[in-house]
Image (cartoon, rainbow, N blue to C red):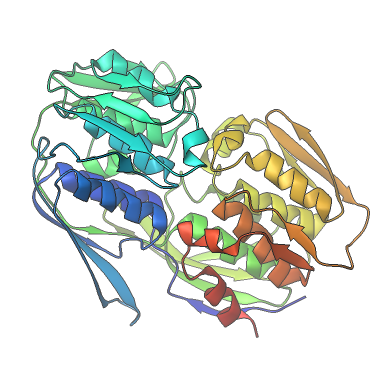
Length: 433
C-alpha cells in the first residue's frame, strides 16, 4: 500500500461548466472572458467547433490564484445568430457533450451542418437529441442505427415546445434549452429526476415544480449579455484523488476549489455514508456555483458501496467507474443497479468494469442496468493488462487502484486520460510519499 499526502491546486477545471461557458459565450452579445477553462481534449473540441462556425476564440496561459498558470479563453460574438456555415464536417472527436449540446445551437441556425467524431463517439446513441429538435422544427438525420454522423438542417423558425425528458440527461436538457433560446415563444422542459443544472444556473433560467416534476422555463429570442465566467475544479476529477487518498491508508490530501453543486458532488455523500473520512472546508459561492475544499484521509474502515436510488445514480453517473473500483478494492464488494445509462457512455462502462475486475480476480455479475462484486478469489502475481476501451474514466479508475494498492496492473492505453485530466499521472506521482 502506498501513502499519499499533499495539497492539490492543479485539479482540472470542470468539464461540464467549461463546455457550457464556451457555448453560452458564443450565444452572448459581446466579449466573454472565461478564466480557468479546461485544457482537456473534450473542451478543446467545443472551442474547435465554435471556431469552425465563425466564432472568434482566443486562448492564453495566465497566472492563477495558486501560482500555477490557468487557461484564459476569450469568445467574441454578436448574439444568437452569429454563426456561419462551416466549410466541412464539424469534428467533435471523443466529446459527446460537444456533439449533443452544440446540436441545439445549430438547430436554430439557417444552414446545414454535419457533426462527426472519433470511432467511439460515432457509436454512441443520438436519437435522444434528434427527437426534441425535430419537434421544434429542425431537420435532423442520423445513421440507420441512430448514431452519428448528425446532419442538422437548421432554421430561424424554431418553435417553442413542452418537452419531458425520457431519461435524466443534462446534455439533452441543455441542447433543448440552447435550441429554445432561438425559438419563438416559451419552451418548458419537464424533468422527473434532476440532472446536473449548470445550464439553468449559468443562463439564469426560472425553474419550479409541477405535479412532482421539475420544470424549467426558457423564453425565446431574448438577447444574452456577455459576462465573465470563473470555472471551478472538476468534482469528477476530484473523485479520483479522493479515492486515491481513501485507498492509501495513512494518506491525507487537501483538494482546493472544487465545485460542490449537489448534482455533481453526491459521490462525497455516498462515501461519507459508507464511513469514509472526508470533510469539506471553506465553503463559498462563485458564479452561482457552490465550491469548497475537500480533505480526505486514508482509512481501513469503509462499508461496501451499494448504489440504486434513481436520483443518486443520475447524479454520480460519471463517478460510478471509480466508485465501483474503489469499493471492490477496499471491501471486495459493490452493488449497482438502475444505471443502464452507464452502457451508453464512451464505452459500455458496466461491461468494462466487469471484464477488468474479473481479470484481477474479482467475482462479478452483470445485469442490464448494473453489476455486483461479491468477492475476490485470487490476487494476480503477474501483471494484468486492463483494457481501457478508449475510455478515460475506466483508465483512470484502474490507474488509481494500481498506484494506491500496488496491484500489478498495466493499462492498455494510458494516454486516453488526457481527454479530461491531462496532468493525471503527474499529479498521482507528486502526491506519493
